[in-house]
View 1 (cartoon, rainbow, N blue to C red):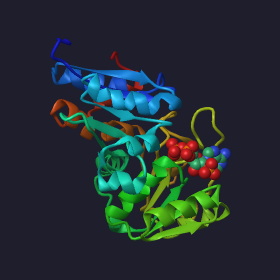
View 2: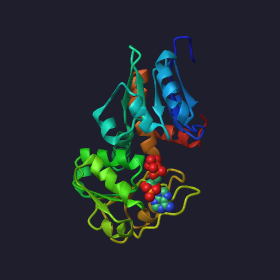
View 3: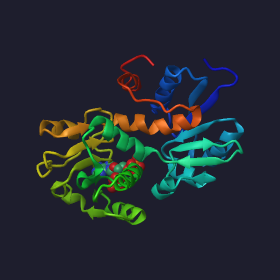
View 4: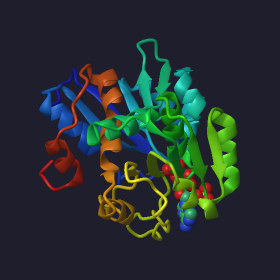
Length: 281
Ligand code: ATR
């Protein structure tokens, strides 16, 4: 039920019609019986700053920000967390009572919470992590891994310069590895993360030999369509623990929901099914 007093949030992106966030937050709003709404906000890049500045004036509690606006959202914020500034992107905006915009980045939190939930024995400090890709998602993930105590991130990207820029921006124990050396970089690693789009439905496959990866290493993919990517299937066949990427999406939404609606929501099997579309929304 949405009354005249409902709190309203949404997801701003372009395009936004593919976003699963309205399903995610819609489930939680119903589940917790909250008088609120969460709506898609399709906003073209040229309109972003005006649209985001209008959110407080429209009475919004806040919004998620998705592709291609995450960097522009940081610039539009009156205040942002040190983490969001370090990562260079905001995915969660809060409209404060004085009309100002506060920005956070919860992608790294979502990534770590997903690993902790999917593989409770995993520890960030257990060994080096190999991260494939150097886009926006990789930035948040590498920062989260280093902050969680990961001793070394081996970062490899098709365009090496992007990986070098990421390493220079974040600082810390990041070793940039040539894309051609991605398989060799797996030796001695405790975690392998794919943050590239390779392996996604419609994208080329991810070509990487897993042989050097220690048996105890955890393998995860931020691609969740398909849910079990070829990388995860191959890792599972070798006996590795694997965690799919859907949980990162679900967990990154939790802090925003709490900011806007006052309850820290839970990730459950029922929620996963609803967001995947297997169960009625
Ligand atoms: P996001 O910001 O959401 O992470 P992105 O910036 O488009 O998305 O990043 C996509 C990642 O997939 C990048 O690391 C990209 O590599 P480049 O930086 O070289 O573009 C990687 N990627 C996409 N297609 C690829 C391909 N065919 N081979 C190797 N890497 C690819």
